[in-house]
Length: 541
Ligand SMILES: [Zn+2]
Image (tube, rainbow, N blue to C red; front, side, top):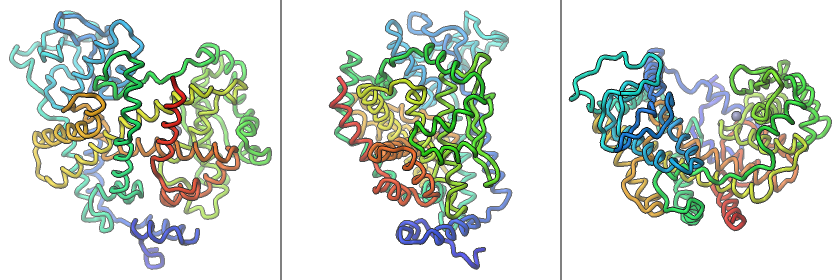
């Protein structure tokens, strides 16, 4: 294959790819399938390191009822066990609606997160309901409340051992992963570091561009304006955990229970949904003929988990849409997910069955496939025959997305800087990596967040678990938000989802910038999000 079709670099694909024919693109993708020959033992040590990091993260729970304040009060309910960082962060979000204890809870969780990042958390309180812990003073005592099954069985160590800090395990796991990824470097001549592979091969966006895009969001003059608006809505100055503020939510016209009832009546079974697919697609703007073509290629199965879209691997097979159907019929959550998964299935069907070169099947990366699915999901109420969200709710949603992008853009920059530091210090100890991560988290906070939050040296940006077990995945989140806004803006401009969706879904897996230029006329960038945010700020009161 390589004798007939030369390998290309990202620089070439970016510089020359705009003028390639579709066939040249297909040939480039074909050659790329043979771009590396990595020895099995290198791959094995990589998956072993990833599994070990994954295990460490998967078991990192905090037993919330055992967090005590200075007066020995317990703010959280018994049995509440939260996984770092996802559940801890989501608890901060949920606490905005707890008028009585919300703020105290949020401050306590921030303290817990900071102790995880700085590894000053007592080792014994990790995933252990047998001890009470005051995260402020760091005092640990054997628990006098037993809320977890099988708790109180462990022997109590001597008092001096109770406060022993976690021995930088978090950073030891990350170093292990780093050492394993480095072993691939000699077998990857066109992208000789993991950082290069992540950006040039995985995302196909040069690192310098991603960095510039994230910095453009972080330093936008809209950030302090949205920050001021949040302060006004909260009635207090911002605190660092407000990077997870989730109060930009409109009260919907229907309650969840009302929606459940409407959905269950329309879709008592998975088959009922499958039968309705052509009708749903026509409502989204597809022609009768295209709607039927798509429906012929999608089957609906009830799901055991949440939801899932499994594309077909050959044109004679069908894509599977999986969503939950309860005994009494589908509920609103199941429907909302089904509409999202249907977006994936439609993209999968077009890009397999209606593309010119099957080697170009797909989209540049997962951010694009998710953005296309969100276009469908955002119209779920109209598909039920209900009125669509009003201008104010849409503006609130935009501000919510903007604030989320601002938050995660800084997290992405921390992830990127930490990987550079590891490559610059390949023999670092876990303690040195910890010091560096804390330093980097503070620097990025001080540059982009301290001016808005009025507080310096916060380390919260280093809490994401992906940083330990997903290897430079975090920059994908902010990029995903930006891409979603670009696609959404184009759909609105075109005024017709059906034809526009098909046009985009058949561009295929070219580089993200070329895809976006084909789809919207501009390369990947934050302009659509920033424009929508500016407009939203003028609409929301
Ligand atoms: Zn999805």
